Image 1: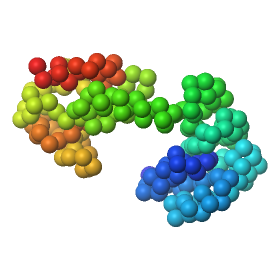
Image 2: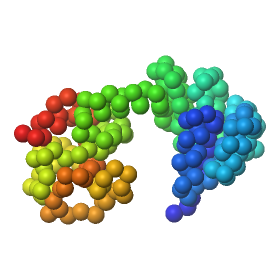
Image 3: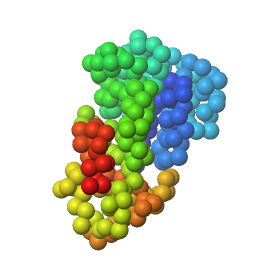
Image 4: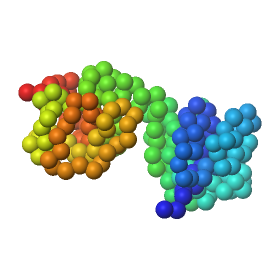
Length: 224
């Protein structure tokens, strides 16, 4: 697999976290930030770090942003800066532009300007926390689309010891099983057969329609 080149425009908490995470994988990271301190702090995590203005189209061109497979506009402090950065990336032909936003209006504007995906970290985190409070069995939730979510959860007691064939998760619960973990932070196991029997300490990872678990009694239904 050919390694990807990822551009990160803005190295605040959000951009820095992405850079550090990407450093664990086989990809090149080009990062730009107006703060020399921010760039220097991430020197060991990025392939190329540039101190400069992310709204400067000539700088973006010179730094190779146009050659990136994905560019993340991670500076959410100024909507104007984000808009200009998205416009320049679009003009440079970047195939995928991901942008951070702080409000619904900002999200709409950035989408209209050419961002392929706009995320609101604080809003997304708040939603996940609220859902975790309602659904104690759920360990994590990642919304993939408007109504499709990836969920990680502990199986109800009524499932323990039963085979996947017996449970028939897709038909009975609208759950498409991806795999399971032996515990938190353990490696995801995607090798399983229909006769595999669930254990109490395992975490199940599955895809489902978000509407299916919006009700607080979602997992109560499983136990019946």
